[in-house]
Image 1 (cartoon, rainbow, N blue to C red):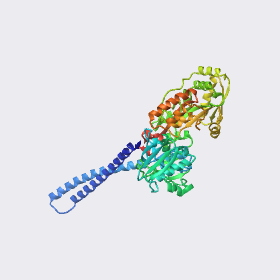
Image 2: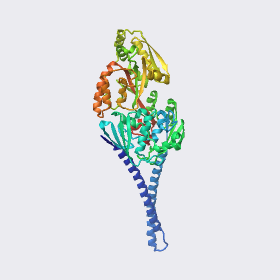
Image 3: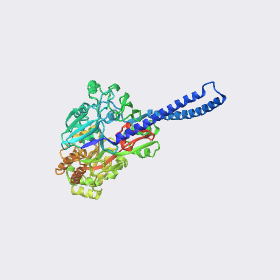
Image 4: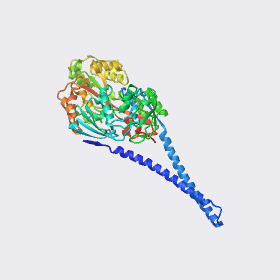
Length: 562
């Protein structure tokens, strides 16, 4: 199996040709002006000759001056247009983020806020394109062998880091190995068994098992220059001078946690960025960011727009809002092993009793999509089937009574940050309607993680899973027996082999078939109650333009001024 780049290279080549045409036109017009000016000068000079000659010469001079003036006007017009284009491109794009980078070291950062500006400075071997498909990046192609366990990457030649060093297979190997041993990036490369440099531009990666999510995870990585990284040690990424990447931008100024000014890397291997300067600015309050967009203080908000503000911003002629399916899965966790919800009837009662439409409105103001199992509508391998029962609170009451649980006290555990408490209150209302005596317990982020993810100490909880990839294999792990991500403690030995087999198939149609079988086996047991995937969104001023397919990747490179 081999993958190669196509459309991106054609698009960039087209842009380069267009720029070249403008430059050639300006040069030709300037040359014409020079020739005409010289000709006009010769015609007007010389004091000898007859009166007729002088009259002819004067007439010719007048005509020459007219041509020169017209040419001068054309050149001036072209120069003005060029100057306007340059001024437009040089205009600074201001990007609001929750918090500007505290470090530009990809291996000492927890991603999150540190990733916003880093995405502009670094690249990876592969990327996701405007259709959401994996595409070549620093690698120009790859081949898979041994049933998909071995991936051999062919790297682009001539790609340079901003310190002048060439990107080679040694750099690629170093980053994959570094990611495997770093806690914050281990999740992405933990499936790698070995990584071998074949030659300067060839890298062989061997996986522990076939895993199609590997490419999605690889796309998240930020590759550094091996030699420079090792030379700077623990000082790497802490000053402007100690940041080296292959990306479209270079860090020019930086106040950690406050501001970062990025300028175009004119030697970028995909071509010089259209926008030459981007300033990242901390705006921690989402409402303040919305106001800053409306007033033009910032040009883009690099975080999801608050649900309550989406409609108002979308109605504005000054702001563009682009939405896209996100990585965020909201659900209700049920403890399938201990307590009340070890009883299937009571889990089914919750499934029938919860108003998921109401939960979508409460959690997102309707800006999301209800799902019937873990996995977003655009996730790779998702069969996109309907398996969840419609709400029926009368049936739910009946199940609670049959289980002898009418009036049973239960505690809903949830985080104390919006919209979690509102979701918990909505759930409390539904549970009380079907016969439980429910209360809500709010926990801070650390306390919630300890109670739910670590100790599994809960009966029922509001839950969110933010996946690292749009790959069904990652989400189906939530339903697989003994998988560390199975926080419901649910078991289904019949579904497990289907989930594992699907994760290793490269044939997407075959994967969808296996996931469909697994979902139909699992979801009637209600290991969790799926709620929705919220829509991601980005808002930017209407003087910016970008293909909507590129918006979710947060790359300034894809934007340009109108």
